[in-house]
Amino acid sequence: MENCFTLVNGKIVTPTHYIENGYISIVGKKIVAIGNMDQFEFDPTMEEDIIDAHQQYILPGIIDIHTDALEAEIIPRPGADMPINVAFRELERKMNGCGFTTVYHSLHLGYKTAEYGSRSKYTRQQVYDTIFKAMNGDTLINNKIHLRFEITGVDAYDQCIDFINKGYIQMLSVMDHTPGQGQYTKKVFMEVSLKNGKTEEQAILDYEEKTSRPNIKGEKMNQLIQLALQKDIAVASHDDDTIEKIDEMKALGVSICEFPINMPTAAYANQQNMHVVGGASNVLRGGSLTGNLNIKDAILNGHVTSLCSDYYPPAILHSIFKLYFEHDLTIMECVNLATLNPAKAVGIDSFTGSIEVGKDADLILVKLIDNIPTVTKCFVQGRKTLEIPHHISYNEINNLV
Image (cartoon, rainbow, N blue to C red; front, side, top):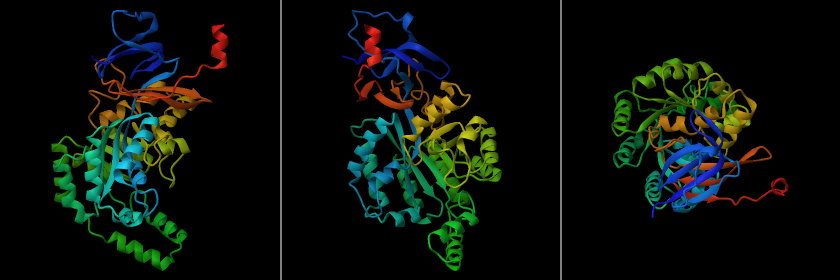
């Protein structure tokens, strides 16, 4: 018997409309009807459940295309390796509670600084193999791998190609954390080095060593990106800081600009019809950790089109409502930043990312408690994966008397 239920009495947010008191009917994995409650007719012959949303928001499930949370779950402290399978399962539950129905786990490759800093016993091969196997098993949410390839990782190039050919990867980004560009200007690099206890001479030597490292560029970079595109893998650039960098990336076939460093770069990427992604943590905190682009300002100027969680998964849901409550944006615009727009960026918007008839029933119910959004129910392809029971309030009891 196919799964069949209707959510009623909800505040529904579609890509273009807000339905103050509406219903959504689901059959199997799909949304089959959406409308106002005054149009809803219960069919007693149908074996369907009626789920009262109690005037909570009904939103499409959040789609996060860049989160470092899995790396932190596996290694919460340097050298503190947790079993990879345990980390994956526990993070899924946390992500589900944040309202995520699709997650692109960002796993680095070729990033020696991160590898040395983690002091992990796991090889990158072990991490990728284990996560790929886990995400193709019995899971709560839709899990994907976003491979973050560091261009100085020349020894990892063949491994990156291998992971793509094996079908492990659903998104690729090319990163360059070499100081002197991106978010690590020479000034920032020197300031951080001195703050961490290095002498000026040591910091200069470290800077010179890092800037002289060989990297993947030219034909090898083109081959990597073209292989990804041939396999319908979305490709992103990272920490773009100039218009020239945008032109270079777009010429290679890159369609996503992640974390632009300044407003002119974000604006230009947007003008070039790239998907521009900013960190929700930046929005929630009120700005960048390193003094770079304020994502809220870029959103209000129409330059950033999608939000990702980056390093703090709860930030996306809170940023949606922070933007809605505090600025002149519609609830639809705010929700699209975390659902439909990222889905478009990675090419999955034909079946998920918005509340529309025919799409997957990837849905969340959100209750405002002291004006703070809390996920109370989550459905992934029509399957309930999270439920916090609704408790009737004193006010609701009084209204019933």
